[in-house]
Length: 483
Image (tube, rainbow, N blue to C red; front, side, top):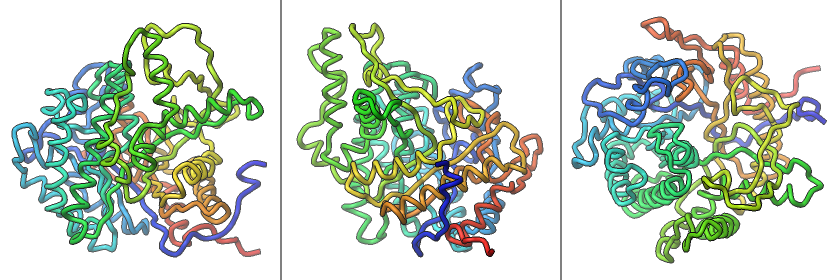
């Protein structure tokens, strides 16, 4: 039975959090204004061939100057929560040179936060959404654990001190798997470090310690006065067995989930350490490569105690799914990497709807399945869905495909909440605006609102999906149409 045929009517719990989201580098522009320092993405965009349309985010949606237009759009949408990120280098331009705060950056985010609160919208603030200050990367970035932990703690403290009286939801890192896999493993995104054998795992190790350090900083010094929550935003495709009747495929799917989601979730939500399946697999392959120790770093017992429990809610970005089958390998690969360490072959079903991106297929049922997987694996945590979105190439106002996709995905959330008792506390539509979509520049559009990037005023026009999402928010779900 298809999702359309299996559609249910009903409403979400009374305090369900409806939200939309953006990130600083993708919408702000103003990359050289008012003392902002350089980030790794400023550097990455200047290298020919890195961005598919050779664009930059120097202006983007110009939200650095037009944030009040965004606030107006948010108010009319009806959301009570808005997830955005702070540009680290706008607040502390050169973190390795000490905590020299850029007051213009503080003023910008204070103005944005105050404007949101004035219209009844609570900020959900992400501290790190891919845009590492370049001067930290110049000294190793996520591969320099001590420096990253020190600088991230100092940056977080500045944010807690300046904004924490009004911000009650703090996300430390957005999509750590993407940061490490694409930034320090495959080298496809900034800072373009190609180290699929070891760098990818070291970056993750540093990130987890930086996250836990900031959680403890808040817990020990700010929670009692500010009464907020600190969490991390994870992401994963839902991986299912290509042949559900084949035990090897079922095992392969679970192994893939441990590598994709468990890599970061297991240390935080279970026992302070990486999943056993991941540890065993990487150790075995490392030994086959002639190495004495695993390429996956180890946590000390002290580290494990420090890491466990360091997230107040389970932040989760959900987009798509993959099929898994076991991939037999007789010899260790000449170039080990995360994907090869999994020993899993991933594929897509040719019947799945392709929305024009190389990675995003529309599989609504994957939403309910991954929420149930999280419930079972991590003892039913409070889940805040922090991103779900759909792209096209045109930015058309008549985005019926996005309307239908949101309808079906949100309905799967409703099933998970009402039928399966999954503890989901909110849903976030990615994104409020068409924006700079990383390596794809302006060639892919995810916005509920069209932005005219050829117009110096960056004119914003709501799409059909904006009005549809507003209706869902107004009804807190899906009301049965009158007969």
